[in-house]
Image 1 (cartoon, rainbow, N blue to C red):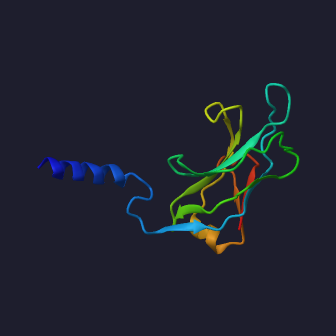
Image 2 (cartoon, rainbow, N blue to C red):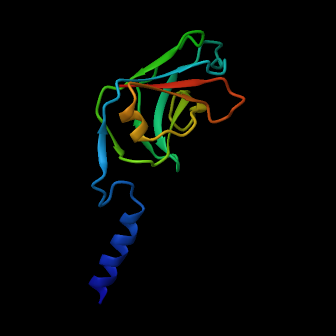
Image 3 (cartoon, rainbow, N blue to C red):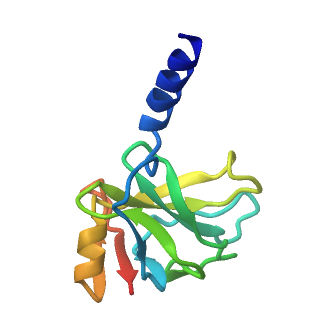
Length: 146
């Protein structure tokens, strides 16, 4: 009986996991994430922000994080290179790109902008997928390049 309870608890715990038991995971062929028109901010010392991107699900779980682009020139597109295959759930699961100002640690980093929702199916169907900002008042434009 105890073994059955442990197995049931394990199944329930893993059901919240995005990839547990899901054969629909696909490796997304993404070469870069780009954003234009980020809100202008500066670091405490007055320098340009250090920017990184994350691909996240609706719960904010990060699937991928780019390296930090130090002293990003916000008057030009900011590009984060994707240097590895990204495993995403195939289909219509909502995904987002979040752009952060890196302030020494991930915990101290501040959100600059978040994209509107997109899906892995849209990425697979497009060469370059351009997505507006989640906040309609924010002029940021995100591009996922394959």
